[in-house]
Amino acid sequence: MLFRPNPSSGVPIYLQLMEQVKYAIETGALRPGDQLPGIRPLAEELVINLNTVAKAYRELEHEGVIELRHGSGAFVAKHKRAGKPAQTLRDAQTLVAATVKRLRARGLSEEEIRRLVEAELAGYARTGGRHG
Amino acid sequence: MAEQPEQPIIATTALRKSYDGVEALRGLDLHVPAGSICGFLGRNGAGKTTTIKILLGMARPTQGEARVFGLPAHLPQTSTEIRLRTGFVGEEKDLYRYMTVAEMVRFTASFYPRWRRDLEQRYLRRFELPAERKVKALSRGMRTKLALLLAFCRGAELLILDEPTAGLDPAVAEDVLQALVTHVGAEAMTVFFSSHHIAEVEQIADRIIIIDHGRSVVAGELDDVRQAFCRVEMVFDGDAPAAVFRAPGVARVRRSGRVLTVVSGGGAEEVVSEAQALHPKSIEVVPLTLKEIFLASLAEEV
Image (tube, rainbow over all chains, first blue to last red):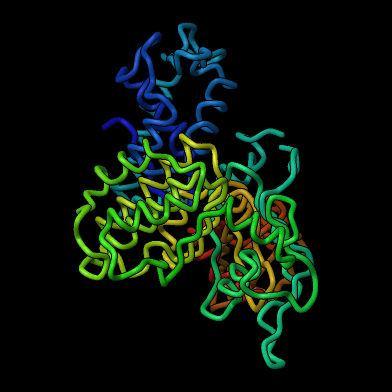
């Protein structure tokens, strides 16, 4: 299964879902033009609130990651995401992978690394990612 | 995101209820918009059951007012209409033990002109309810499923559930939650459910209300609540300073050796900038799980 949000992680489920969709696109599991599961079937499958899935899709559409077509569902956007070509993300991923590896080598746990990144992001952009 | 675009399905204002001088509700304000699945959390004795009784016209408020569908819950005529349009599944399940499943369904159907035979058939199959078995011979899980089926099929616009999964095994509980998510998605209805299972509230609710000592202490969209609550941990070289945080929403500050911990219900940003002024060695921001939010919001009251 492609998506598997964890309700107890403390991170809002719609954000987790958004990240998982983006990740699936970045890894090529989902390609431009591919159809995403419908809002209702996905909510039922994951046993999460329908509005949560709808919110994730709305935000993804707003970011230009997917397109919502009336009556026919959600599709991975054909155009590349503005300002973030796949190469940039792949480069960034390499960077992150190397950093995580080094931190692990220093004995940091996954949880500790995650917290550090979150603290770093919270320091700047606590208001980012949401609007309105 | 603008709220109150339309009339809330449930609204209470300054609701008070005393039983023999003991205050169960002490000025409760509730607001449940249409189309939401709202989880209703609180300790035992926080006032959850009293609230539900007032909404269903089974108890009268001492002061304040409760409205469901905009109708006052304490007047006999409007209360009848509320109950006609609301499905309720409580601890007792309101089933007749001597009837079979099929009889119970037919009996209930006779009271509701909008009975949904299509749903009846679907959920009898989906829940694998044995039509000819007597209610008294059903397992607890089956009884809950039958009660839920009856509530679904009446064409109710609102479901009020008092701990719907209490005492169910995880598999049956998941069945019940999935049926709820599916049904609410298909029928555009509102669900108000109390629960002690925080994990299941996190899973299916899009709104939460936490009450404590008869008052609402946290209310809103679950995502907003989650985003608002966090723990900021600072580590200092020496003993942590006895700092005062002025950021709005700071629920708790704890000093323990070199560590200073702030629990905030008003986001991390302002706490972090105050923390930076203290020049700690490190600052960490950790999201809170709903369980931690629940516990933090109770502590606030004490």
